[in-house]
Image (cartoon, rainbow, N blue to C red; front, top):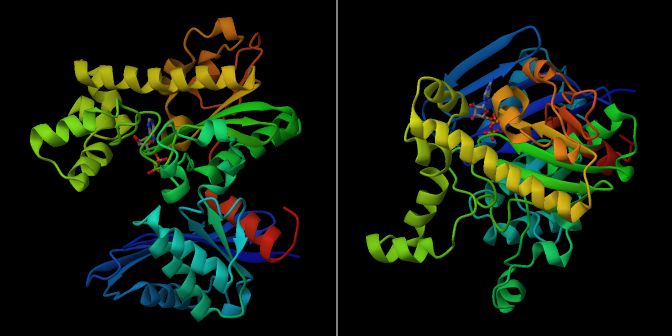
Length: 398
Ligand code: ADP
């Protein structure tokens, strides 16, 4: 029996969607509605054979979802709304309440909204997306899939910050970690490709995109990850600084009279590859600029790799060794140079990359004499979301 599952990622003015045929995981249709709330909203969708794009006025998320459902039928992707068997929603923050994806009930929704304090830009709009689908498809079960849930296995020693204790107990300030759906998907896919149970492996997963995070996965469980209370911490990213000396912030605030919002903007939007290079947040642009001799672009690339190497090193210590290093995300999946720089001179760890396999983005890029496996695996959060809908709402194994 095949089922059709919709994976949804609702943003403040956008809605990304993918309809998958499960359990194969075949993409039936995918797309995005952008500029929701504006007169020139745009809907783009495609199947493996056809593409559509149209601009119209879309007042809110309810209108956006209504349009999406209409188009699925008018483009004959489905015959009727009854063809949709389940909906999975990406939700940014599950706090300490959600250790796994959860069937959407009134109580689940209320808790997602309650957790908005921890993710004010994302959780409210994720909850709105869920509400709209529930109204328009009342008999279709839905599941919330949290970016944080996979990291709920972290031990206290990995998630407590050395701040006064009450900041944890009163406000929930701790490491939560993000990109959990991707880290889980990539680590389980890697284990399948290796033919070894994930429970027997020590994996470090590098999700390197505009946002980047590293995760140490021991026996299938996340035991540490570089993003923390927010997706701002850890390694350097496209426009985010990652970890810096925390006292730089009050210093800048005092010196330039910046308020918290302005400091946030500086850390989130003006830093990272963009801040150092002064050219772009996009890794490809920085590669081109470095090749053309730009010193700051070259420095940005070196720093990017070094900060990832430091994190990998500390996670190897924590796991007591490493069986496999895996790269994913736009940079991890595509940049030969990034992988090369990160894996450079690691013979002493038993980790050696084969240049030719690295150049052609092979699934396994380690050299024959490498003890540690090095893999490149395309992440697929939508598939993971659809699998969770099958497992949790429909009680069908993955
Ligand atoms: P997001 O975190 O927004 O999902 P992506 O995972 O799509 O981001 O990654 C975007 C990053 O991947 C950009 O920095 C882009 O330059 C980089 N990237 C994409 N393709 C390549 C490529 N062929 N070579 C190097 N970098 C690439």
